[in-house]
Image (cartoon, rainbow, N blue to C red; front, side, top):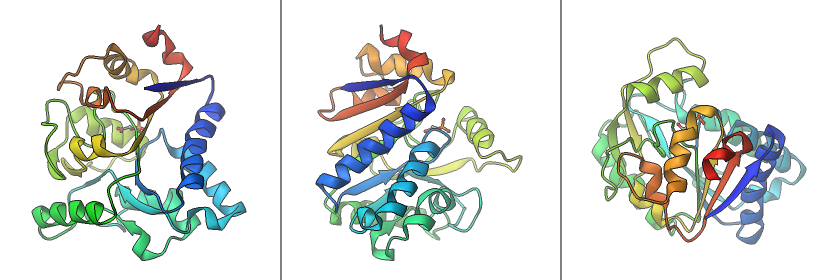
Length: 242
Ligand code: PGA
């Protein structure tokens, strides 16, 4: 595991975006799983800026998302698909064949999950999974205690996760109680993982990772031992690593 401590938001966003741009420079056709949340917003701003200067940067990449709310279609303002359009796709304008996002409003959720796994497999698996971190240690929507061996699946979201998401989405609307998520097994198979950690509420979750002991109560510990795990973390959390 490589950890990059960042003193401020500019450094954090620059390192996060730089990692993605470096990977795409070496592998323009990379298959990338994208996060939503407050943490990656600055990274997306930098990616949009890079794409404005050089639109060819993203012309061959393929994009998936980590998770979605059950019941919400891509046009719903609270959907993660909507978030990714606003923060990235509207600016870099990928071809439809370059993007496969989870369909939260699919008529048959089970079939949607199997189709999604099939699409990831057909793309050759993930070259990069970019992850945020939940205060409770979740990665994507893999909540504490969830099995690590599953494929893409539906999950019941914790109250903590729903409240945190309502806060960054700045909404008073009810956040759905069910989600779809890429599995821990899929994430662990990604050839590179970039984990973004900022905010005081993530202190204990980051601590669980740095402690180096796998623990199903802290899903992020499933990443321990991954051969190409890079963590970009705000330096205010550094004491947990000392
Ligand atoms: P956040 O969410 O970036 O809004 O803190 C992270 C996550 O829940 O994965």
